[in-house]
Length: 509
Ligand code: GLU
Image 1 (cartoon, protein in one colour):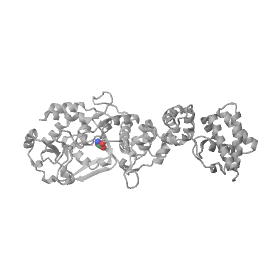
Image 2 (image 1 turned 180 degrees about the vertical axis):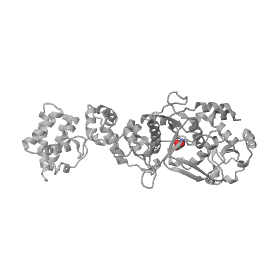
Image 3 (image 1 turned 45 degrees about the horizontal axis):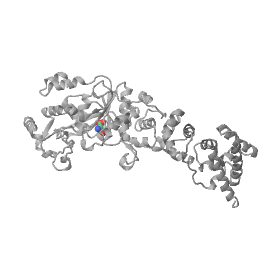
Image 4 (image 1 turned 90 degrees about the horizontal axis):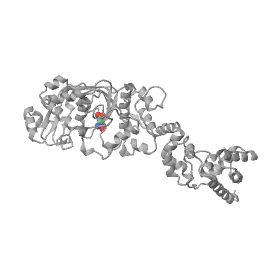
């Protein structure tokens, strides 16, 4: 609607004119518009990411709008968690409700006065009507859709505007869209192309509920226009509602934004990713020790491709290369093993001090022994850790030597059997007792010295020591690093215990 048109309108003309004046102009403007109904699903996070990337790749603005008009579906704390989650992932939004003010989300429930005037304008134009049938409850759930009252039977659709308006002043009502009965509606989507539906298939959806709040379907159209949204990115579950949005834009005389619909994320060929079926949300993945930057990189590629083989991109690099052309129409398959691989890459790329800071809470939880060195433990974990939550299992041996079978000393490749292991451990015990200090270099030299004196490979000495001190076949770090971390006293105790065990078994060999 143009300014002059607003002012000419019989309804709150000045109000419309002011609203339209506020619309920020110029450049791309994208939004993430979640309903705060629970956790951040990976699909939602990906929509937020694509909206952010699109704005940034075009030098535009990205903003956040909390769509909380369906009060029955609200989950406590969810609305507050969303901005923090986005910020934690680096998806910073650019503005707040006061255009140009500090970055904060727009919240639809705080904007309730913005919607009714447009609903009334649509009634006045014959594109909507006041409905008094009482088959819509306070949350906008339409009992007609459940077979209680069919659309055709809705007598309010035929009420003359003036009559409806008069009754609406005194009676409880909702406002419904008057979907045309004939013809077709087409909208264009950048990913799905032209989508055409028969108007007869469209219902008279509720725009304003009896509590005065708009439904999501109405508020998103009004807000996308008032907030100057240029590109709307959303999940494919909205594709069936999109023709109704097109009709609203037309009735209001507004240009539609560019639609970019992204396909769903699947757990397997037939099932959509779903929290209810045990699939992880974004927060679950953080809780498992996946790094936000690894998740972001991974989900960027779930349904979008930059072309070529390269897979690792920081957020800043994604901002450079993102383009709508790379978005795929086919559903994407979530592959956790691949995410682990991405995460391991991001862990390895961290500066040692930064990784130690991230790993510290996990290390402290797993290791209660005092005097362990967090940086040293972190250093052995960093090259091998795929997920921070695996740290507990990787270093649990520090506090408590697990039960292990003496068969573990047998290792063909290291040319070690139980008798060789016993010899090597006896030597190691003496060398460790006599070592001048407990530096890594000293421990290594002592063990290498044993190998040399016996004319065996280093591995023949390292293997039994590693098993004796860790009780594990796969360890973070080799024998030398493990001994160093455990300290001389604990190492001697564990090597001594292994010797006792092997000696006791000796008669049976
Ligand atoms: N509030 C909708 C949701 O939570 C947003 C859909 C849209 O982006 O328009 O999915």
